[in-house]
Length: 295
Image 1: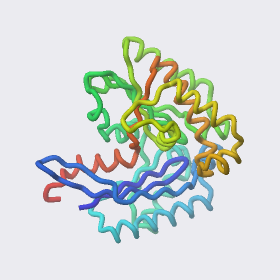
Image 2: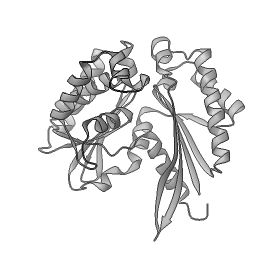
Image 3: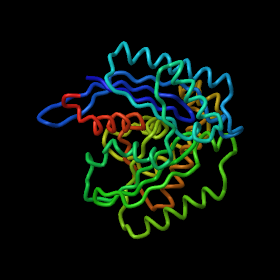
């Protein structure tokens, strides 16, 4: 059995096709195919609150391709979600309708709190130490989701309109930074020991660049050194010398700035990077919904 997840983000659009496995009553999934298309819808949405006809057409073509792949892979269930860029685009609902008519995909534009819940549906904290306290940090192109867990229970969660594309386009606001800082001050001050869990493409790439052993956390000191190292290169050299993809080479700098700010304000010294993201959470929501057995 195969499920599929579509994530329409502000920087890129992703399709994950996963094989669903059941063993001794436990249900898990294995990634089969992951495709990433760097459409960067946020450039339009955050500057103009409107996605251009050209990018809308590219998105529809991408969804048509994803639908064909899902058919070929014989996907039984899928879920397609759009996040920050489509939330802000005034023509988002029209694009959803066009995708339904031309690509035969039902797309939902999810609120920030729903996005956070999907991301944390991946249950990565179960593979660490439930008795500890963790702050989930997911940095996207248009928004950052923060969720605080204590002994396996979520005690606070909020989505902030602060992301890498917004910063690059000078659309981040001082009051949003302050709002995030205040959220962290209120909700983390009672914890003597707090660890971070980072999700999303940028922290995954930073973790690879840090060359940490799988499972080991990334220290704030090392992340800061990485930031200074990357920032010492021009955008062109981050692409040509360091080998970063063009659509990663620019956003990785503001992503570092968000992560470092969050870690500083929450007093966190180490961040775990389980290499999961929105699409993993979507697959888990499908498993939770359909329970796999007999479906």
